[in-house]
Image (cartoon, rainbow, N blue to C red):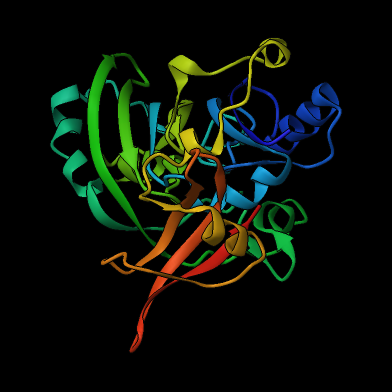
Length: 287
């Protein structure tokens, strides 16, 4: 088996749990995922099957989410899974007041990931250190948020806002919820999260665990259709599959290109570099 699955992750499972369950369903050891989702979150979890695990790094990076943020509440984990550490009734807050703050969180921004996160330090996850009671300092990271759109407003003593967020890899929606609440002066936490797109896969096309066995895999050609493709003729294709570099007339230098034969069969991933004698297609991943 060689390809990808667009899994609709249910709430209450870690991404690792989902990979383990897919292994059992497909009776296959080699399975990986394309980006961690918190246990409480739902939605698109890209799954690579078989040798396709080697291609996860080449999938599109942008992601979209629908998030519900609660104001007036702060928690240890920056979502409702954690312990409440402070409450501040925020009934006076309005949607218009929050809208004026959203531009602070669009574009290239700096954010501090939640202490309870899967980031590794010294061979351990930060959430493991936090649960062990160790003091955890989290480094600021630069992330890209291309758009935040308001979907709905829910007034009350602890009002909530529902937003659609389009962002790059590494962005923590929990951190946006926390920091938006801080900007509003009342605190905030993530109340619910659904990932609607990841690695080019959309929620509308996702599958439940029960549906996995009855659907075919997404082929590498389909999953990597955002990339340019180099087509090799028979002899060059044979040499490529042996791991050899191929002289080509491709004009643009590129770090990631799909490589196929004349019948459209996917052969792997390559990059084009320039030498004084001409351009070379160099193997990165060969199947």
